[in-house]
Length: 222
Figure 1: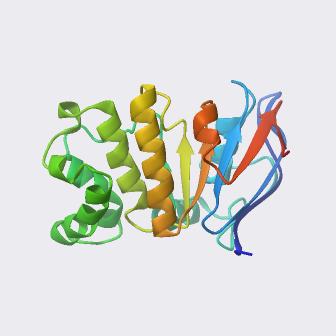
Figure 2: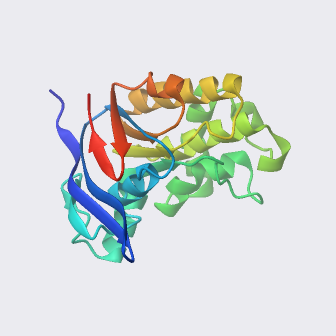
């Protein structure tokens, strides 16, 4: 059995008197693809943010790659995200002034690679995702599905331990959504990254190794 790369226990997050998360727990093994599903307002995105150290829980524990995310300083959480994590959001969030190649290579640049080194390293990944020929284009010059494939490349280029994906196909039509979902799954497996995915898409959830349901800020597995 693969080692656990992410472990969360009894995570709770409150906003004033309102608890967005009450008791959420999750274990993720190296290379595992986990889908988190539930109705709007169930706490899915808040849980994802807590797992990634974007939100500090008010209770419970999160351990990621041996790092205590709750006890870590802001600087330590930032370094963890930069060095060990990848992110794919609903709208890609590419920088409009940068080319697609530059967007995809950004994590490598932040880790100290030169522009030439970063682009050389990311091009094979863009090729595998079918968008290498668009590397010199700007985000506004390509389709939403092509932008999301670049976002997948950006999330994986630094070989993270875990990729967090928040509704990565939510802004796409079904055909493009299926392409991006398949690309995320296959590319993550090839890179050896675990994936924690939040989605409303039952077809996308069906591609996961395991599905976790959230309701009223609590997790539940079948």
